[in-house]
Image (cartoon, rainbow, N blue to C red; front, side):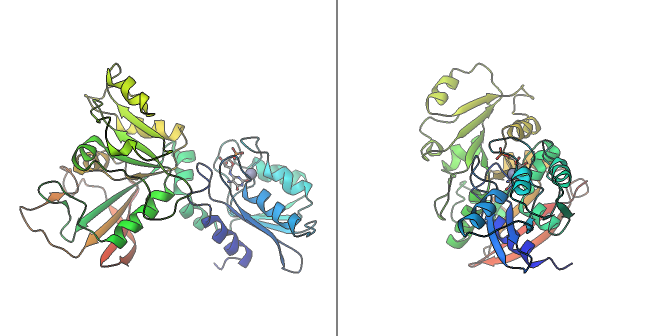
Length: 365
Ligand code: AOF
Ligand code: ZN
């Protein structure tokens, strides 16, 4: 189905909120007059800043446009609650907007249909539907958090064409090219948080921040470190202005205070056989408003996440290099075998410099 042009524009605007609006969804709004002229447009700003509808109303006001009787195209149901900001549905009605075309209902239980009900009660005409699929694809983390109580988990792998992610000595940095690494940073930048495991920290001492592309904010860093083994000198602590959360399975470690003094938040989960309970960790991250979780981990944590069915999407970079049998390290620890392994669907496949990028999604069970 062809989308109305203003809804296409609103979806394009929503893209600009990537990396900016966390933990709020990426929403765009275009206000159109009776003659089809665009009167105002906007997208979600930083948390606590204006929502898309308010930004569009402000844009129209700044240009001196009268929006009474106009149509607002918005990629999500206008909110009805007092959160960090006031209700958009009331602001639209108060401005005299005559009709709202929205892509879909807001899955946030605080809103979930109440925005439409309030608009209706104020005499505003409502259409729902155009752009729904696009809005969900743009906001997988927000929908996942609202509907499943956990983030959308996207795991990145950089491998040789035969699927090896590191050399025998554990070095992994030089398998894919500079353009692929830059592209990987853009995916980090759109996530609320980057997740890694203690094995990768001890092996590579990565910073896991966004350096190779511009970023309005640094994603949080989440470390799975069951016994709190991370050295205080680890480079992941050196990124400025970044929240670091460490999940462990030891409630009373003497290292806790030392890591907290570095600014990290240490979260002990009930001990699951000496390891961090990964499903419980994701539920906790959901409560802490993490939408998209970008995983860059080694074969152990990757293997555990796959075995527990916790990965929603794979971001795989394949370099035109072959390591061959007996050389290099596989991306995952042992898996349950082809029959029991999770099924995947290939989505977009693109060439990034000399490498390939494959996005694959786990098919729901
Ligand atoms: C809208 N337009 O552009 C966005 C909406 O804490 P607050 O006040 O910023 O509200 C956050 C919630 O508002 C968020 O969880 C989602 O339900 C909705 N986001 N709503 O009308 C927008 N970003
Ligand atoms: Zn709102």
